[in-house]
Amino acid sequence: MATPRDLPVVLTGDRTTGPLHLGHYVGSLKSRLALQDSHRQFLLLADAQALTDNADDPGRIARHVIEVALDYLAVGIDPGKSVVCVQSRLPALAELTVLYMNYVTVSRLERNPTVKQEIVQRGFQRDIPAGFLCYPVAQAADITAFKAELVPVGEDQLPMIEQSNEIVRRINRLAGRNVLPEARALVSSTGRLPGIDGQSKMSKSAGNAIPLSASPDEIRSAVRAMFTDPGHLRASDPGRVEGHVVFTYLDAFDESPGEVEELKAHYRRGGLGDVVLKGRLDARLQVLLGPIRERRAELARRPDFVMDVVRSGTERAAAVTQETLDEVRDALGVFGFGRA
Ligand code: ATP
Ligand code: MG
Image (cartoon, rainbow, N blue to C red):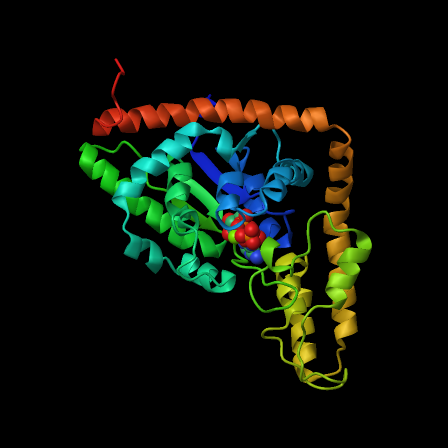
């Protein structure tokens, strides 16, 4: 029988900036649930990375460590199968970041398309925190410290994996052998779920999200507020499906894709009102999120259990990441002063 150590390693993480939302569910959590039986899976509560653009609000970042852990357990992450750990409590990650920083140039960091887009969104200019510009390096430290081979992420994370692999190749070349594995992204079929405004991706920081913990009323009003086709004034008008957020969500969440295709054809022809579509989506989301919300409420009544899951996971992760740091140090012959 394969021991957990023989299984391929999966790493993912979430910034502890706010509650997880439907974008996380389709972009990454669903894959994590599927992988936890067949892989050795680590889930990183990325509080250090969250601070890179939230340095003025450290309390919120700290508070959401446990909130995001609750979200994990509520969707079905099983602490007997997956390791949940806290980034800032893993010193090997910080040491690897310091080391890798020497193998990445500022111009390479500025070329990262996701970072570029996030800089515009946040309105950063020369006042950009150095930690924010460099967070892809820290993310490379995260991925490699666990020797992750598979990283289930949303589409926005592809440039991060590419950048991490560049660092891996550089380290392996210097070491003269493959100390670190390259990682492969696993992108879900939905890719990037837009926010309810249809403007950009659903994101904790953009105020356009439906959290996994949303109440029935919050779900209903979020669906009601969804962007549809502005040219579709009466139900009898022919409508456009492209860019229609309700259809995008039906594609992501409805369990009868055939029926959704028929609805699209009907909408294009005319004679189908947005109210009908919104009603269908609302019903589907209520069914999906209801049990998650209930499990979350149950777990919230057992704070010691949740704390234990995170504490023991972080201890296990500390051992794994320290081992990798030692190997990289030995292979490069750096940071070795005073060691036997
Ligand atoms: P923030 O606004 O603080 O950056 P976020 O909502 O973007 O938060 P992250 O913690 O940055 O969430 O992302 C965690 C993971 O979830 C990443 O793998 C990311 O690709 C995925 N993800 C986040 N939002 C979406 C989305 N709307 N669609 C698909 N995947 C997503
Ligand atoms: Mg993000």
